[in-house]
Image (cartoon, rainbow, N blue to C red):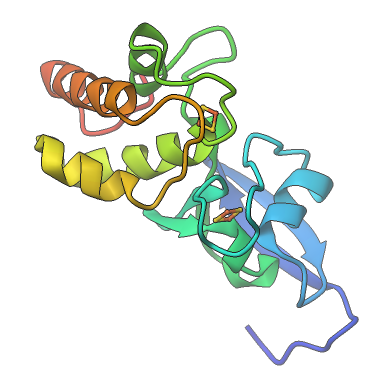
Length: 172
Ligand code: FES
Ligand code: FES
């Protein structure tokens, strides 16, 4: 991207959940605010706003990233996926979501969007994870409601189901 000027809005072109998207952002605008306030993509949650809780996790070019530590202008030219991409359609849950529901892996759901996105990225790259690696991944997410055992159980179940389906993505 060419030099950015503070206070000026810059055009940002990227793909959002598989669809081309364009917006305008000042250089200081956070990706969380861009998503939630300009694009109405409110599935991405904002908790600590300084990179600790993981609630704002999205996928940028296939890698999990904290949207609260990312500037909107940084996603120019990137493939961005948010939790809105996880369900195959508005009336159907994805495999990860169904496993979370079955295992009571959420209560208030505040942390869930970020956890789902981290797991989604992780399971695409590691289709047969062991429990330890899932627990390791969850170190980057704070949940105040459930305890982590049901979340780990849901992740293991979803991973097995995805392998059964012969898929390496979590959106079915
Ligand atoms: S809101 Fe981004 S890590 Fe907490
Ligand atoms: S389900 Fe409430 S913070 Fe995790």
